[in-house]
Length: 321
Image (tube, rainbow, N blue to C red; front, side, top):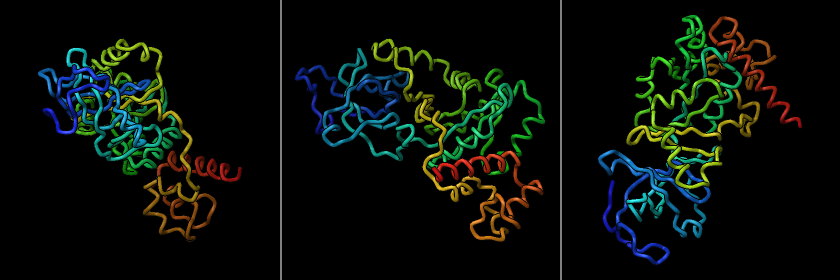
């Protein structure tokens, strides 16, 4: 959306010069480096949005406000020729994540490979728990469908699809499943997480082939960006649709939580817990446990239950020390 000479924001730059275009548009912060913010101004040109290099107004420091990647902002265009602007207003946030420090994320896309490398299920469960702790729903995307067997897919579907997660199988190499993935991302800002070697970059490049070029443009614009590799960055797929590739989800220690709360992050346990003999059953060593009975009957994935026990004991040890 574009604005004229909005009341309260003049045409004069902070340095006293009068080079402003006098236009105000909405945008989203897609990257922040060394006090500079790169803002994607949505759909105000024939070719779609542009990325502007911006500074934040001094008033944010006075009000103890820090712009975050993902923030929706009102931006003043200072110079259209060099794509320079000022962030003059932070719009209300839907949410603010702690780790990484980003704003307005709608959901998470957790990417693992079906094979090569074999999925690390303990790692996958950690990702799922971390997302839930931050109030995000998750889509589990298993890549490399082109080299996997149907039996391998079915085993993953049984382990994770049956416990309420949306599970998608794709091949970034062949394009299988990518149209369905695009539909799931449409109209949302999605954080991407997953280990190395599973095809995250291939999927992102399939969704937005020029994504690497856009990153390069920002890096070339200022030397500060060339040597800064660990930062959060949002990529605009289309208007109102963004994906965030961030290093912030690589820290896989669970957030502060009690071991007694872990079962709540395994939704498939819920309907069987009422059959447990003891209130507050940990589902580990207790007799007459509804969850363990469901496990033996094949209603709960042994992969998931094994991970639950590992994480429970980890939390138990953390509490002890």
